[in-house]
Length: 135
Image 1 (cartoon, one colour):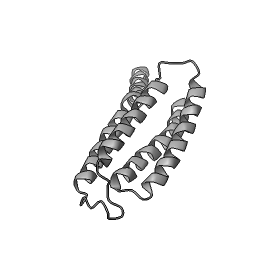
Image 2 (image 1 turned 90 degrees about the vertical axis):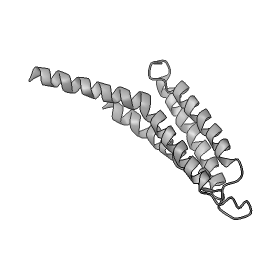
Image 3 (image 1 turned 45 degrees about the vertical axis):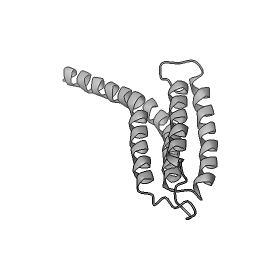
């Protein structure tokens, strides 16, 4: 019985580490694939409302790479100093960035909407994951 509890504790620690290290990168790759598929399936009519602008995929790919890098740098779980302050500043910055991107995506194509969903998922994860990982 004691051995089973140790195995379950080890599985829980491993799954927490997996979530901390890899979930952000996996969700980013899925989002980029979704943006690329949407960009390929766009009719390419620049003057039509709701279509992707030329070069929209490249622009939002660069935006998402910068966001991903910033998240990995700021939320590194090995850095213990100023952990709560960094988390709160990251939440504040990403919510403001999401509001700005929401205003831009309101009249944009599918790639900008997918990027907005990516940002909203980050915003929710920044609030939910620290609560779940503390308990």
